[in-house]
Image 1: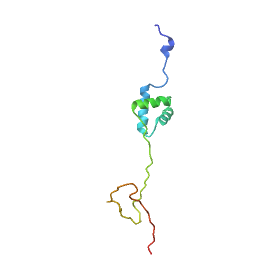
Image 2: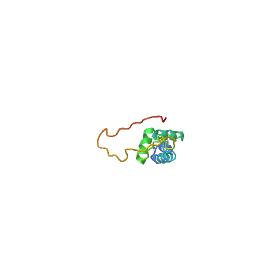
Image 3: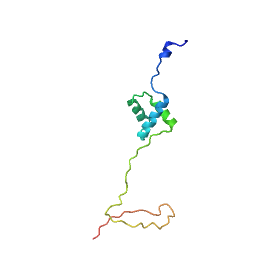
Length: 110
């Protein structure tokens, strides 16, 4: 045989790219809000040594993108005990700039 002894005993380090892609898909399915940084950290916790740039490249190839988690803020409180006024300009037609102005007048009934 004409091969070197080191070639015969060689064992590659790390995992194949397809295995890493599968793990990236699994992590992103489990945690849809994770981006490439968090996925890289999770892979390192799972003892898969991979660069964050490689993870980003693989995620782009797979079409995976972390969703942005936004906080929902309620801005209107419709369940209040205050007086509700009718909309006086509902049927008016606006013809120009500064046609309708809004004013808020506080007064006391005596």
